[in-house]
Length: 118
Image (cartoon, rainbow, N blue to C red; front, top):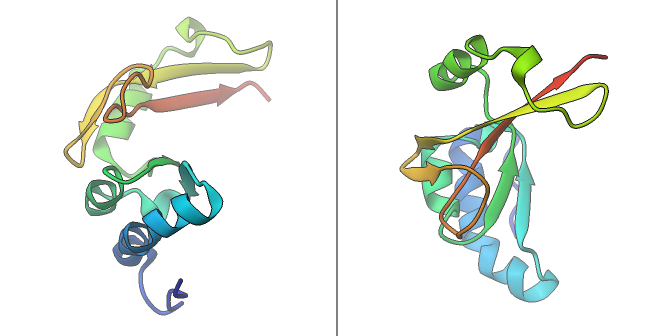
């Protein structure tokens, strides 16, 4: 592994780091998913990483698609998780990787919005 420089952008570097080391991570520690912050979530990084592993990341709220989706939500109509939390799922295409419904194949991705009453 190599440490990323603190002086370089995570957005430009994270996808390449994961791609370069994904096979080693799978073989050495059995990794199936990576978890990354929203700096990871760029079209380029998704295209680099999606063929190699699953990932969980917060989608940046600065994306216009996210803003449009959130603005159109009716919180009272969202399915409930419990008394304090509701969620909504979005199917979309971002970075050339299909995002639809629940994960049923390796190529499908989904976005989920969580709403807390707390």
